[in-house]
Image 1 (tube, rainbow, N blue to C red):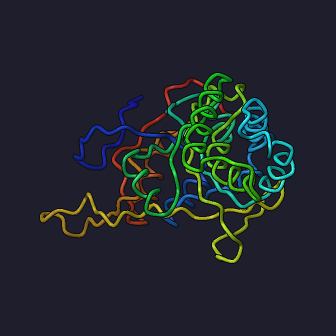
Image 2 (cartoon, one colour; image 1 turned 120 degrees about the vertical axis):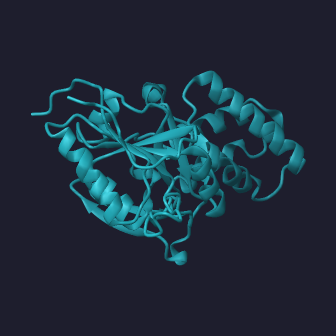
Length: 284
């Protein structure tokens, strides 16, 4: 059986990429809406989201004399910040990994390959950051050291009212990157929103078997049409940061390769290639 990818264009540019694992419902939603849904961080599968980062911040501040005046306030302040509306979407450095198929794509599904450079540009234009997660204790200590030193220099730290709130507010984007070391294999990168107010009316909800999940939409539309040529002026497929799709373990992988191509074409969305996972995992 031929495992060669279905080529969709002659765009041969070699760019760094990130991969997003999802099921077929998720892929359809991404392509149809030309957006990716960023979930409120407290609803992700790691029950220690934000908590791990804030706990590390409290311990680090306890060891630095310049923060002794506000150290006692930090547990309550971080508890309140832990309920704020912060939204993330997850990506991986790994394109075709069994644990990711099992954990995020219902054993099958797809791995969607995004252009890193384009995704980062879209993030900046929408007030998001695209950053790599931090797993090891040493890397967390280094990140905290750098943050606290920069904060001290910028704010000339002295005991004053509400300083603890400002400190935690500045740190929340880093706290969103701290992950338990047991998740290291995921090699995760994240799109991270700024703190979002409900008054902005950007927050939506979706139901699932596990409950109601708040989310915001991250717009993937770049306005570029890489398939448009003078020879084929009708090929107006829009660039939505996606470069390729890998079909996960599935009993009908070849059929799904063609079906996914049809999905992109029907929604005038660009994808360079579609291929099959090389993992021999049997889906019953």
